[in-house]
Image 1 (tube, rainbow, N blue to C red):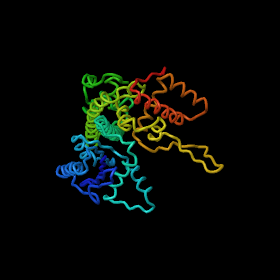
Image 2 (image 1 turned 135 degrees about the vertical axis):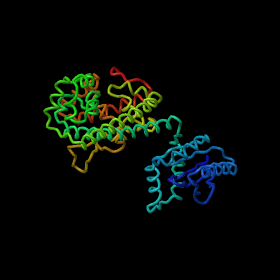
Image 3 (image 1 turned 90 degrees about the horizontal axis):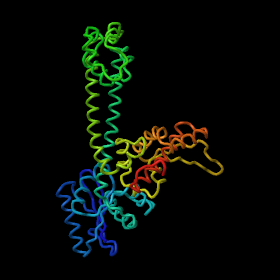
Image 4 (image 1 turned 90 degrees about the vertical axis):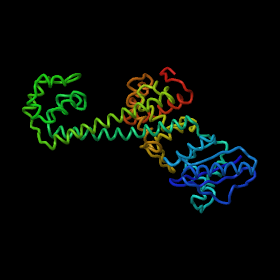
Length: 391
């Protein structure tokens, strides 16, 4: 078996090759290639040449997961039908430190360390597959949507702030000032001064759905408003609304993309009450391959909803905190589902009531529900089954 370790960087990569059984290496030290088509071809030609020298055609390639920098080369390696494994850098770093007390670190040695890790842990080899590639895509889309949603919250706050200055009475007439009716009126009139001069029928044409007022009441409020009808504020309001609508449009585009991947990879997650396409995308994207986790407890630990235990001698901490290690995106998704599922599912509702009877705080109970959710998700993804409260 030939092992190839690749140390990834933004502009170049270093690789090292060794045949495990004989200890024969392709070179004394790592070889550097550019992050380019020529560099990838050089790597492929080197692997082919080493196969010819050793007479060994079994190849395993390992590289560390390094943000975005591994995506191009791994795409090339998969196109050449190589078996490639993504390795957590923490694991290789621990292996490097365990080999020597004072162990140097550089690009040359890192690729050799990856080879050594793969040889020592050959039974753990898990090749990167097309489904993992799709999960990486889902992870990327879901994380980006997560941050765009934060931008939307900021944009809405900007609209709210400007409405408060321009027409503070306006908010009392609408349950949601970001709804279609409210936004249409704000875009059309911008200030109470303009709205006060409007025709009742035209204003009424904008009002539909859940609205607390009539056109007459809204115009009367505009006439008596203490708001500031200044042009610069009106301009900023229009700009803020346009920005908000642009972000909403972006979110819809991301939602469509995420839906396609969720339907392809993990539609069974949608059977869990409180899990929609957005949360399913975050959950599946962060978990990626459920095979990475040997138990539900390891998934709980990865999500960071496990409890940090601190004991020393006779001392035992009474107030335990959530570790909050691992994926914050997965933890966020679990929290959003936990807030809903106990209200709609009898099993989780009974669990919530049990913890409440024990005198636990609301957020402490949600923490317990998140752990229970992890176990459910682990079971569903492992078995490929649908969620059932009766199971």
